[in-house]
Length: 314
Image (cartoon, rainbow, N blue to C red; front, side, top):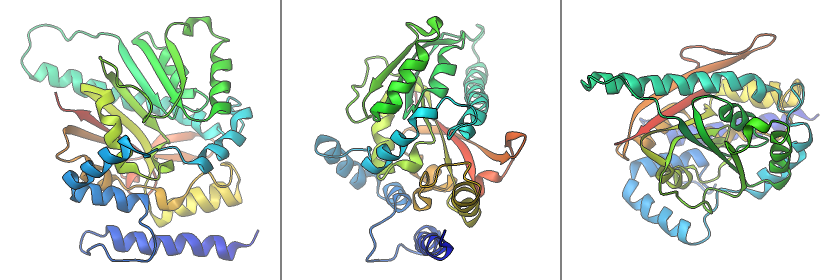
C-alpha cells in the first residue's frame, strides 16, 4: 500500500468541495469538473434552469448508471447474502432502515390525526419502490412485512439482480409480493398509481448527477408518500472512517466502494428539496460500533452516515 497518493487525493477534493459548499463563499471557477455535490447545490440555487436541463437529459442520454459502479458491484455479487461477506455492514444496517421508515409513517399518521379527523386512521398496505436494490436485502425484508402490499425493486447490474432473484425463490411467501426488474429509474415507466415509499439506500453517493436523478425519482412517489434514503456526509471524519479505515486498513468494506467527492451533506439535501414540492424533512444520524452494529447517534449526520427523508406535497 502506498499511502501518500490515497491521502493526497481526498484531501485535494475536500479543499475544492469546501470552497464550493461553504455558505459564506461563492462558487469559484475551476478547471476541474464539478463534483456531484456541487451539481446538487447548483440545482437548489437555480431550480428552474436546472429542471429544464434535466428534462433535456431525460429525453436524450441522461443516465444514472455509471459503468464503473456496475463493474464494482458485479464483483461483489457472489457473497451478497453472506452475513460475514462484503455486504455485512448492509445486513447490519437493515433493521435501522425499517425503524426510520416507521418513524416517517408515524409522522404521517400523526399529521392526519392533527387535521381533526374523527375517524381512526386507516392503514392500507404499502407499495414500495426500492431503487438500486442490489442483492435484495431491504427489498426482501420489506416484502415480508404484513403491512406491505407489494415491492418493486430495480437495479442495473445483471449479476447482482440474478443473486437477488435466486435468493427470493427460496421463500414462497415472497411470490406475488416482490418483483425484481433489471432497469434504471430513467427507463422505468411511471405507474398510474405511484408508490407509498420510494427508497434509495446507499445509492445517491454512487450517482454522478444527483440533482437530475432525484428530480427523476419524484413522480414515482405518490402525493403524501415518502422518499427515503441513506448516504454519507462529506467531511474529514467520513473520509477517515469510510475510505481510509473501512476500505484501506480494515477492509470491512471492499476497496473502491466509495468516492468521497460524491458524498452529500444533509444541509445540501435540505436545500435541494426546498421549494420543489416536498415537506417534512427528517434525518437520523447513525454510527457503526464494532461488535454492536449500527446505532442511532443524534448529530452524527453532520459527520458521517445518516438517513434522510422527505414527504411529497399532497
